[in-house]
Image (cartoon, rainbow, N blue to C red):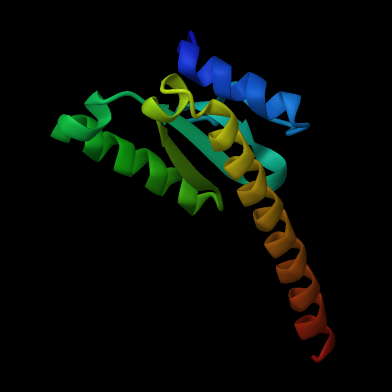
Length: 119
């Protein structure tokens, strides 16, 4: 599957910031625009039709649900954040988000281990 120019631009911006992202990863059910397995985060870069076509919106919701069941959070990034001169700010916020996500996963693991040690 061919990535959109917007997905490629965001992917390159994230890789330039050291994010171990994968472009067009297939998870066995669907292609993900940008996946960051280490943080259990998927990023979908959406054009305007994702907001105005109810079938597309429902398909997106189902895709998000499927990923969530596998433990992944899905970020939906509108093309306008990439094409309207906000690519750097968008990438920076995503990096901050990913750092928080990894911290929470590590804290949950520590808390889980602590909880298990009680029994």
